[in-house]
Length: 165
Image (cartoon, rainbow, N blue to C red):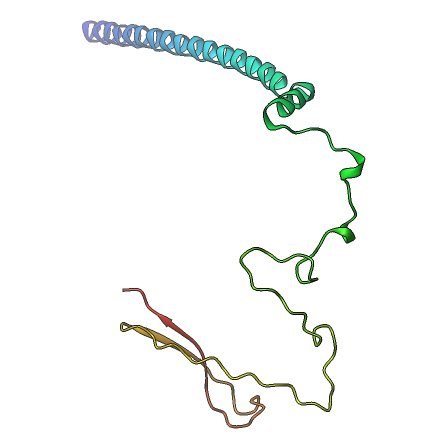
């Protein structure tokens, strides 16, 4: 009985020693990793400091003005270069025509209410283009009998589209 107890305690002491040995090396590895991370942090902070200094130099207003005058022929605005919004020509007022567009005619009916006596001019509906061969989809909207103003209850075609293969 005494030999078994001695053997058990010796085995437990060996296991505890091996565990402590492995734990010691794991802690040392983690400390080494922590030193490397801290070293990387210090290096990154120094890089950030240098980049901030470079950024403040590159964005110096006096330097930017000098560079703009030298390379872009840009100068500070003078008072005679400022105008009011009303003096800027607008599209459709006859003073400005965008390039590549036909001359615009001013429509006298624009901005006026149509007379109640005259019926509004109806424009013919554009002709529908035939869909290319392939699968097509048609969506229809059907109103209930009571809400349709014309009272005919017919469905109305609202969309045609070609489906992708």
